[in-house]
Length: 358
Image (cartoon, rainbow, N blue to C red; front, side, top):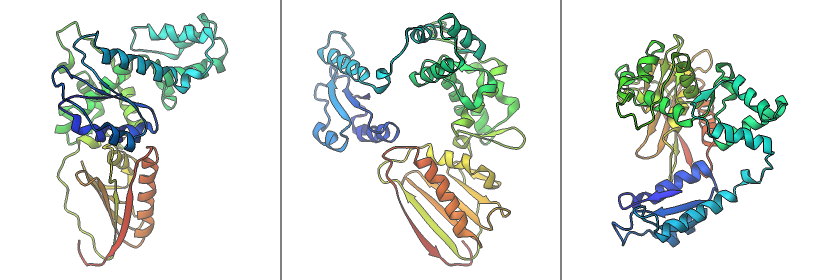
């Protein structure tokens, strides 16, 4: 669902590209809200639908009154789209449904594997293989979040907000910014359980993070390529690195390569590239939009990789004896990230430049 109002109607295409990149051909319902405040509010429907055929319908609504006809029509259209979803076509045994309903109604933010298995047995799901398949279904449905690579933490998340809230506390941490993007293991508790988030208003849900779960949240960030660990068990958060770039000196022939995303470039691409290539970063020469790469025992070459956010480009400059191989490796790593999106258009070009210093 794409919700627009009078303040962001000019960003409709931006968010439709976003939806296409992450959701592929998933159906889209466009909702024009607050029409009671601005009755003339409208978008170019025909043009948008020609460019984005996944748009199924447009709705003019006002959330001010429940009886508004547009809102009722939208609710019915949303229900129909959900009913037609592929997941709903999967046969679901009654005892599986009982397990799902049990966890859907739980107030706990997380549980362990033993409790999950206990509930399964109580509801008649006794076989281990059935429990494992059901757990994956519950993960796909968003009822339980289960990271297979983090099983040794024995944590099945029931409330996704508990997890995302913990992650955003790290990403929004002034302490990590002051430490130039480094999250120290000793600061996990101070960052995630920052007193700023303990509001006095009891009407709002308060999330608690026991010390035994702090490392789990950081490891989830690592799984999603939002950070990487240094040798001293501290973590680098690329989004919170310093902005200024260091001086760079290179000599000899250099290859320059540019990858351009003409329509839309997700902000997560470059930070994820930095996470994947972090073992190549030379002497901590990394900043929010760039990094210097050098690992002579792997490639006899030196590279500078920069993200031009305004022009939606990633620029790669490589010099050294094995500059072609190193460039190819960086490109393949970037390609691996880009292929995780759908309908993400990009173009690239390469050129030689010969000089003594750059």
